[in-house]
Length: 79
Image 1 (cartoon, rainbow, N blue to C red):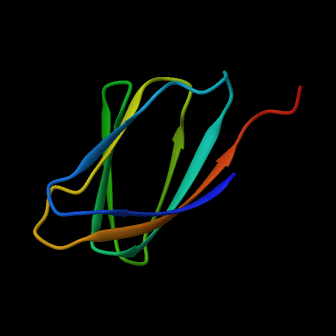
Image 2 (image 1 turned 90 degrees about the vertical axis):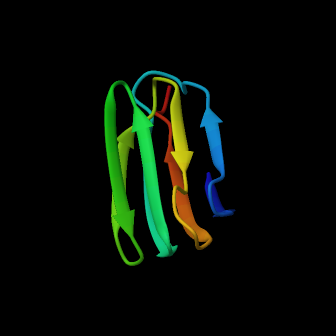
């Protein structure tokens, strides 16, 4: 799956756990993106990339005053 998302300032989205082994790759186009999952917090600014194992509940958030735009690639394991 490939997504293009925009989070407004102070907006967040809670993602459900994906199947075991699923990874997400997030490329930040503008603003600052923060992701929280399994007790870990990671952030990236425009031009940065985040990789997370997405088989636990996770939250994408924009904790800043400007919109955050990013691409997301979801890679689920082949069964």
